[in-house]
Length: 134
Image (cartoon, rainbow, N blue to C red; front, side, top):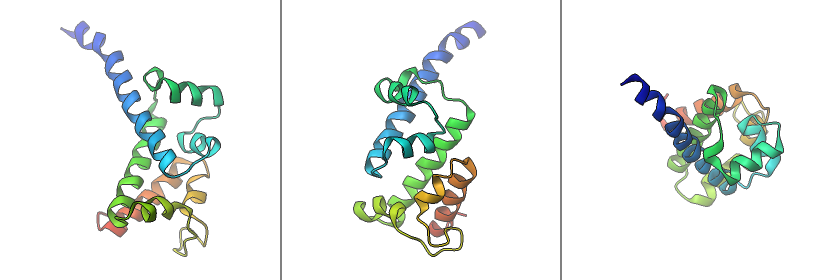
């Protein structure tokens, strides 16, 4: 029985990676991110890996760091859709200067592009608080 579960794990991992990356690339397009920005959010430093994942997302091997990043990005996207029901407002929010203390006049995208997972977390936490979830 145990060997059957292990045999299914790679297929399950490929399904998760494929679904997660397809969702990410759709969000990246919606947010008008360029390749470099999308790579930073994913925590990638290899353009070839980025384009391989974009073409065949099921081939990706997503470690805990990548999954955490994707989780925060999906949460940010969801919170924006709830807070700003008009798509153009929700999708444009990341690009607008923000006077909240944690942004100091920068855009949320600038904060997220530090490359640190912690900054994705901070933006997610800020939006969750705005939704009343924190």
